[in-house]
Length: 103
Image (cartoon, rainbow, N blue to C red):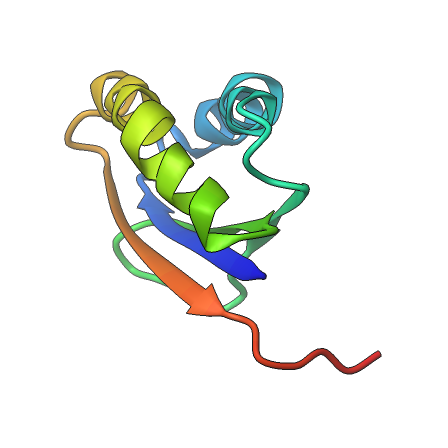
């Protein structure tokens, strides 16, 4: 299983719009690719003087599906985000390979 983590710091002036757009448009569009089995968005609790930070986590069942997402879907979806919030956010992406789960 692969965890795809996207951390975004968004300017406070557009943070409410961004969160609404993520909930209603972007995350549903990512999930519609059928490359991920679940997702969640979390607000990062540490204060950031440059913006409000969020973590969006997607669960991908396999590396093959992650590769499919990156080659077929990610460029378009990332472009939509970048164009909408150009100059008002910073983001970084992390891929994690789950080696064990504890419940």
